[in-house]
Image: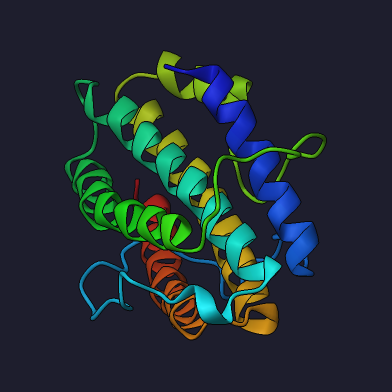
Length: 200
């Protein structure tokens, strides 16, 4: 596990939240999942003609946010004795988010955005800390299933908060459309995860 990537991702996400002007994630309302792969997706060639800082920060930080969700899913899927529904959720998250990372990276390339320079300093937005990731790695069976859901709910809350910031402050139509989709789809998924968690 690359804990350096986790720390960098956490920093990038928090900076994006600040620059995009969105509030920090904390409530359970409208904070949801990552299954936005089934609906139609915005254009992969989002034009650079109409892009502001909120757009570039949103896409850059969401790439890292998605990467951590996939990393969390991979950790869970390597374990034995995990609840079948929770394992299916982890597979679903990976299937939805891997192509979305490619899409957002394509946008960033088209917009001339390179790297994450100047992203020092903050950390939150639902990103898991190194300690959180270590706890997930150490957990087994039923404990791992429960911890994964608890962590992924928080992770999704951060994603929806950041996406709402893009909806409120973004300029690029494709990026804003994608952010709206994240808000809608992940809100639905968080409810499902809360129900699943309550049933374990």
